[in-house]
Structures are given as C-alpha cells and as structure tokens.
Length: 170
Image (tube, rainbow, N blue to C red; front, side, top):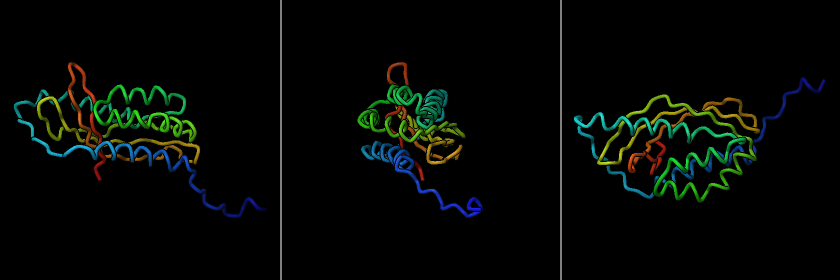
C-alpha cells in the first residue's frame, strides 16, 4: 500500500518564507537609523513610566497579531500606533506586506509574556518586551509558537503614545 511509504518533507513555500523575512527586514531596517544611547530613569519618576510600558505591551500584540481576513485593518492599526521612521518604513511596505499575509493565509495571534522599562528620557522611553506569536499558515504551520524579544521605543505625543522604533533583541 503506497500510503505506508514515508512522505517526503514539505518544502517551504515562498509565502511561508517571505512573511517572517519581510517582518524581520522591516523591523531591523527601522531600527538601524537611530543611535542607541539610553539614559537611565530616575527612580522618583517611576509612576511616569507605566503608560509607556502599557503601550509597548499593546503594540507588541498589534505587531504580532495578523489575519488574512483582517490584514488591512491589522496593518492600519500598526500604522496608527506608529510615528517617525518606523511609521515611514512600515507605510512603504504596507501593500507588499498585506499581499503576503493574504496570499500565504497567515494567521498570527500574539501575546506578551513580560515587559519592563529599559530607560526613559523626557517623553521617550525604551521598553523591553518578550512576546510569543502562534502562527498558522497555508504552508502547514499549525499554532507553531514563535518567540520575540523586542525593544520598543515609545514616544508620548500630546496625550497619546506611539512606537517610533522597534528592535529585535537576540
């Protein structure tokens, strides 16, 4: 019976390779433009950092939660929560990124495992975030977890918070 023969391993599809690659290139490119000088926060300012960490947690979930059915609104949410060079870079890749998510039928559901303040200086903070995304796609991934460690640069603009830079931490 031919069904007893071992099946050759599945070859990854182009879309299965492009989605993680595009996300990695986008985030690395956005983080390459700025210097990485951090000023440690004064312990007396501790209550001021809480909104920055809360925003970074939510942004990490937005960044790691995508669906082909809601790709346009998922990506618009990321754009709405961004500013500066990160916004500019992500906006340039929007249509390609949307197409890859839709064509590869990728669904990601992100969760934040932990987050903490790295530093704060005026109205800008750097927040460390550990997140996990469960990925399902047409290439065969079924709730495969992917872990991310990020530094999210958060800027307070008026009464809102926005991500201005995202870096992967090895």
